[in-house]
Structures are given as structure tokens and as C-alpha cells.
Image (tube, rainbow, N blue to C red):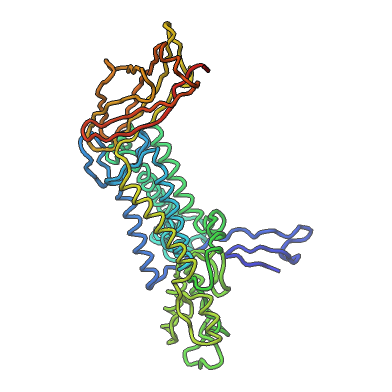
Length: 492
């Protein structure tokens, strides 16, 4: 018995001729390189459009500018890890606000679940980065080496000057694309024009060159060499998405009720008593995964629909109706033998649930983002030591107050302490007990202060950890942010 799995076959039994005399049968046959033929048609055009749009966004986005004011980065989309923030146009997300990133990832996952429940593996076939870059690499290979038959002949012929330069040109082009891909990615983490100049002059940080090399090689290996093997063996999504599908989810199917029995067809031959499939294998030769869609639904199928374009072209040539291979649903396939088609049911319980969750989480995040405080304060009490006994018998605690100014202008702040009578405040780096603290726009400033209690007030402490409130006030708009901490001392 043999189980077909794309271009790889899992063999459970084998004849001596297959396995060789005295040798155990092979568990797997060796990988067979796929030579997809160029497809033409509606879905191929859609894939080209998606490729151009997505790659355009990816390569151009780091170069877009956004004026945030003097002294601030003007890159529209910047993952500013050095300053622990993400800059997304007018939005700034700080490290302590990482829950916004978490929420965005949750919404993205739910959106993927919704798309899968409605349209099957549409993400895999059109917009997945692996699919997009593999399409681009195959197009480059086809440019240098020719279409399917020409590439087959080239690989089968012995090495020659023609074969050498065609292979060389292909791999050099793949590496150039990979370098551009890796370069574009690192531009998201630092000002793109500055980093580009540093890379060209050899003055960029070593980590930039390291990650450029890593991203270049992963793009070259996954998009140029591994290709469909990433989808079949490395990606977990084909195995997960089965739980997202139901009888009303779109998938690509060969309509065997119309296509069988298949067989070659001559020009003047009647179509009576036979199916529309002429067994030309056009659907197989264009498939980037190397599968035969006529074998039924398969894990390797990414639903790119190139087999639909290829089959429609053949049906036009032989004068038969299109959509022998088409997007459909299990429910429609079942109804084809029982009655009229029921159509595509998009609105159903699981799609409603996904839509509600996306709307609820997205709405909550939007409300939170629009109403978040422009002033954020964190208070960190000293831990070693928790307190200091002064020479006069008084107590002193130390605190670090971190003030985050989320505005685009420098702001002035005052710090006050309440909750302990007779408490006195002193500041490191500032004179007096009521200094004005200036925080630059979109910056975090740490202020060290000490809170002291005289011996007379120490007697009033009822525990070794009394509540203490530290309040930061914006002197311009009177907005405040308070944090409750503790004043530590010996047990009474």
C-alpha cells in the first residue's frame, strides 16, 4: 500500500525490484525537484498583483517619513528597540504597553481563522511571505533558464558553459533579492537612510551586518531552494487549519462527477460516454507543490488556484465548459449529486463568532489607545537596603521614579509625596525639595529621591511597611499620575 503525499510517497510495502535484493525497503523516496510551468489566467494575475503590492509595501515602508517634531525620529514605521518603543506613524507604543502588540497579534490570528473558515487556505496561496518570495524566485529562475521543459532539459544535460552561466545568473539573482530582503528588514529597526549609508561605507554596527547575513541566507534557502518543502514539512498551519474548516469553507476541487472517466480526446471524437478531463496533466505541471488535484484534497495544496487557470485554458481549447477544477465547498459537492447547488454560505456560527471577537478586541484596543494617559509613572523602591537608620534615629527610604512623557514636546513636572506626616523629600541631582523636572518629548527620565522620617514621626509607624503615595504633576496642564508604594522600616 502506498500513500501519496504531493511529490513524496510514503511506502509501506515494496517489491524486491523496488528495494533491491537483500535490502530493506526504503521508508521514503528521495525528494524530486518540481518544475512548475508558467500559468496564465485570472488567478495568476491576482497572484502577480498581490506579489507586487505586498513586496512594494515591504520594501517601501521603512523609507516613508513622518514628522514628529524636533529631536524625534522621522521614520514613519520604526521598531525603536534601542529606546524601547514602536513608532507607527502618529502612534507610539512603549515597552510597558506591549499588551497592544499582543492584542494586535490576537486580532491577526483571529482574522486568519476567519479567512480560513470562509475561504480555506487563501492566505497560503496568495499572501504568505513564503508563497510570495517563492513565486518571485521561480519567476527569476524562469527568466534565466526558461519555462518548465527548458529547465528540465537544462538539468538533465551535462555541465556546459551555457548551463553554468544560466545557473550562476539564477543563484546570483536569488542572492541579490535575498540581500534586498534582509536589508529592507533591518531598516525597520533603525533610520533607513542613515543605516543604508553606514552599510555602504562599512561603518554600520556589527549586529546590523550579522542580521543582514542571517536574513539573506534564510530568504535564499527558504524561497530559492526549499520552496514547497517549507509548506509541507516546516509550516504547522496546514495541520492546524483543518480545525478551522467546515462544509461551507472554500477549497479547490476537481469535479470528478463531470471529469470522469478521463482520457485522451481527439478533435472529431464524440464526448458521449466520457468525462471532460482529457488527462493532459496541465493542472499538475503548473502546480508549485507538485501535486495532482484530481487525487482529492491534500495537505500540500496551498489553494493558489493555478490549476484552475491551467484547466480553464484547456477547456477553452477543447470547447468544454470551464470550472472542471474550481473553488467550491463540501456542501456544494454533496448537493451536486442530490439536487441544486446551495451557494456559498459565508454567514454561519463560527464566522459570526470570529467577527465578534475581532470587533470586540479591536474596539477595546482602539478605545484604550485613544484614552491612554499621556503621562506614565513607575515607582521602584530600593530593595537593598530596604531602609536606612539615620544617625539621629530617623528612617530613610530610597525610590526611583520613572517619568514617561508620551507627548511630542518637552514637559515640566513636579513630584510630591503624601501619606506620611512629617515626611521630608530630597532629590539626587536637584537642589531643594520641590524641583522642576524637565522630560524631553517621547522620553523616559529616571529621578532618584529619598523620603525621610524624623525620630518623632518614626514612633507613629504602625507596621514595617506603611503606604506612601508619590504623585507626578504636569505643570502645564495640571494632569497627574500617582503610584502607591510602601515606606519600610523595622517592626514596631
